[in-house]
Length: 598
Image 1 (cartoon, rainbow, N blue to C red):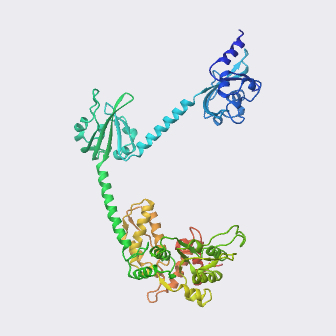
Image 2: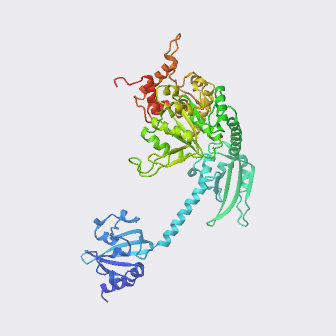
Image 3: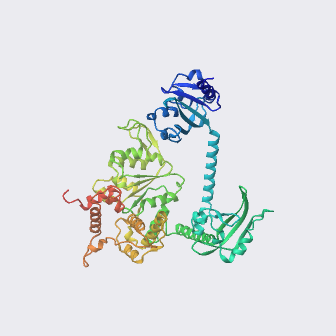
């Protein structure tokens, strides 16, 4: 038989799937094993350049094509595992997941080699494919199992140490690294006695005696042993010994727990339980309402008024400067009311443009105005059965004031652009930092709406009027932000605390909160120190104190200069003062504050 015919016969009948391409990338041979692998017949493939159809869903070069012309693509972008040309044999080797024509997904090990003539010229290329799907899946499952095992070992709180017959460490988990203060790569291979207190060596060895005749039963020692950290510190442990056999090797697994850690944890838990009980008493005491932290007499009267009105459906008007806690008080009233099982809906009247506030409160019908592409329920409908908080009430435009008055009187309204009258059951709480009687006198606020809302007014005093609350609030915010930022800060420096109490707090509780948050971020010690605050009283003369309005004006001016006269945004003056940008603009207008040259 001629040599070429013998070679073709060999390729046709070899058990490994193979095909041969000529130098024009056309199929010369498509052997029987390749037919079985791909389901494509030789008579359909020979003479074509469609050999890729046996292995891929879309046209792309096979390994044989790349051996003929490397400009067709890069191996590492086409194959999961790819080797370069082996120079002495002129072959290529790759491994890849291949989607077969019948829907299977096989992991194939692919080799391609050049066929040359007597002059060394490439006349054809042969490519073979070996199915290694089962092996690949087994390897992946093994790798995933190892990852899960490593994750479990790394997540347990107890130290796990495995030792061999020579008492040398073969496994040292993350908890062991933490407890013994030693990296695993430094511990593995070391005698385990290095980590046991010398006085306990003899007792320890009694539980580590490997007996080839009989496997020892697991043992647990809740006390009596001491271990030694890498830095030499000794500590009490409880430990369990578990003999096992792995891969023909006898091992002993030790599970250790630092008794001191457990005792500290128990002490910390006991302390937390006591603190929880104390905080619950503080929350439930008469000195606090809802989430407001206070111990001052002036706030007790506020809380008592809020308690009395909470059980009714009477409208409540909360009055007070920005940052005094009007929203928190409103939430407290809602939570104590018979409507506490329903929702409390808040609307910030200053945060919405005047042309949108009616739609926000009462909803709108589809097509009511440009952009109203569908019907939308307003806040009154959302608050049905519950409470509606109208924050910054003084910023409400005149048209919305008239509609609000009707809702308060009749509990009914129409959506913007609609004619259907809707009935609601809503309790209204309003809040403002404006002087509404002045606004009524100047025609900016409806008198009838004011009297309708002013049935039960509650004045919330400014922080400067309740100095006794400043230490309580400062420590409350300290605990909150230290916990949030993961810092251990035990208390506030006495001098800083005195400075806080001397400051006038034009931004009230919100300004104090911002000051404490910034100080906690900067703090690097267990005691919180707060830098000097701009004291409005520093600008006054001894014989003639400045008015409150003058102090507020000076403080706002200094803040605006510090922010570069930027009002809005996270670095603007409003954020620094803990105020709404629209509220700050309103105060600037009232106080006659404007930028020089503007």
